[in-house]
Amino acid sequence: MLVVFLLVVFILAKFAWKPIIKGLKDRENEIQGALDLAERTKSEMVKLKADNEKLIIEANAVRDRILRDAKEASDRMIAESKDRAVVEGQKMIESARDTIRNEQHAAIAKMRKEVAVLSLEIAEQVLHRELKDKESQEKLISDLASSARMN
View (cartoon, rainbow, N blue to C red):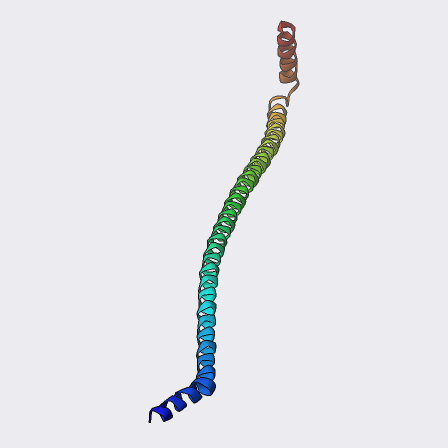
């Protein structure tokens, strides 16, 4: 039995143990390779995560800058529009004032002309009534002549 045992141990050592040990070594190497790959993948994931966070921070900064610039541009456009509206309003008001002034002057000139025409018509009618006879005509001429000498 001892001989059989030793013979089995020898046969196993010669033929079976080397392939079994080689298989175990290969399996150990595969597991170690997988662990190394997992470690590299983990470190790459950490690096990618850091890069992603950096990109997100940069994107947020760019977004904030764009929003700030857009707000400033909007505020500037609104202010310019208000300024233009004020200037246009002032021009319109000044134009309306000029038009009113011109119309007032025209109305005053027209009224003066009408008053002058009416005054002349009234004076003509008064003179016609007053100067119907020769005696009143001579009296008016002498009064006018005496008042003309005084001036």
